[in-house]
Length: 166
Image (cartoon, rainbow, N blue to C red; front, side, top):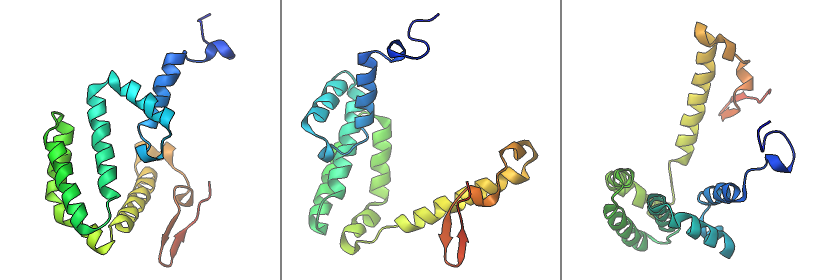
C-alpha cells in the first residue's frame, strides 16, 4: 500500500504542500482584505516565484486603480499603471498593457459616469450558456450531455424566465 493513500491523517498532503496551496489561494484575494499573517505568507511564497510576483503586483496595481476616486486622479493612476506594465518583461503583462491602451477612453469613462458594461457582459455570458445547453442536445456525439433545458441555467430576460430545475 502506498504511503499517504486512503483515509486518515497519513492521507493528508505534507505541510509545505498545504502551505503552498493556501498561498496560491490567497493570491486571488485582494491584498486590502488580507490580515498581516496572510500578507507574510504571500510574501514568502512569492520570494521563490519572481514571475508570479510580477503578475501579482500588476493585479494589485489594477485593483488599486479601480478603487481610485475622481476622474483626474484615475487618469493619473491609469498612466502610472501603464508605466508599470510597460516595464514588465512578461508578454502577458505587455498584452494587458496594449489592451488597456486601446480601451483607455472607455475605462476612464467609468470614473466620469459610473456606468460599466457589466450588465451586457452578464447577458452575453447567459446567452453563451443557453447556446451551449442547446448545442449539447442537437449534436449526435454530445447527446449524452443532454439535460432538460431548464436545468442548465437561470436567466431573467424581461418576460422570459428560465428556472433552475436541477
